[in-house]
Image (cartoon, rainbow, N blue to C red; front, side):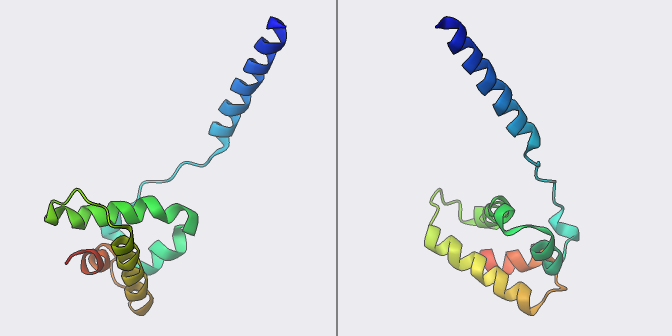
Length: 102
């Protein structure tokens, strides 16, 4: 029985390592050189969350608030998407500053 448990644990460990190795890592992003269009086209929707949270925090630090308001965050990210749709050539960092700063 101990041998079966050891084999199962080893199999699970190997499977987890393979899954971790197969998951693509997010690449570093330099927002200062990226246009709105590049951000929305190059960043898959499933990967945008961490970048949008970073942008929100980058510009939201001015308030020094420890509160995350999900409704406000959603509203601000929609404002960023709307702005970028109208101004695709604008720098995404400048666009985010307009969307996330109050």
